[in-house]
Length: 100
Length: 194
Image 1 (cartoon, rainbow over the protein chains, first blue to last red):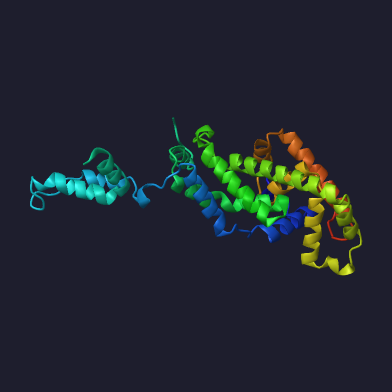
Image 2: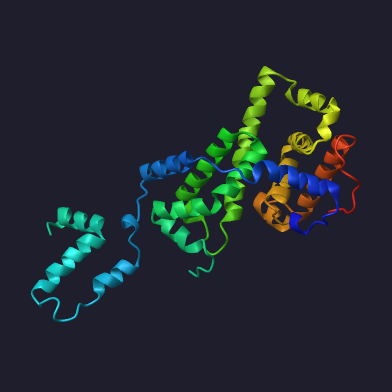
């Protein structure tokens, strides 16, 4: 049972609920709270997910272009460029670490 | 592992340190956690600190949180425990400076002017009366009336038997009725929780 199920004619329940909801139901934290959380999470080693690129990016990367658009020689280079565009963090890391 | 709760994928991402997943969960639960902390502590700064600490704990302890069950009971529990901690600290400090804070509050409540029957003031009277409840009872009242959680959910959050939730609500209602009688039209008890 929750307070949603209470009989609406009981004055005490109705008034307690109204009193709490009138004061607190619309309460929102200030935006700075999230900024503080994010900053601390990043400080603790958290990271952002490749600037909003989702799982769909892998499908784009794996898709084969139609033949007239890209020649066989240009294909790997084109893929690397697309990879750099979609996953800049990972690509930069690989470039620096492995000298790609 | 089977993931069948909507929070599950975000918790899995949190485990990998994904701050954006934390942001999604924050958007989802910030309001309910914040207003619960605010209703218990009645201090905006404390409520924001509690909200912040709750989500940082979520981030830190994500590996210990099950992705196949709803997240909100865990978050409520952390926020309630932090609220307890904050209030106890406040009570100690107030005890050291002035022993009569609650007595003063109660006294001012007993000498209410007649215009307190106006709606807003009556609501404030009720909220003041709620602050006079023992802490465990106040938390149950907030979760039940403000968050509209079920007795079972409250029991799960507070890790106490459902019967204890019922008895705390019963006690709280009786206390509020006795305290408010003659000042606010609270009526008679028409049912019992127990």
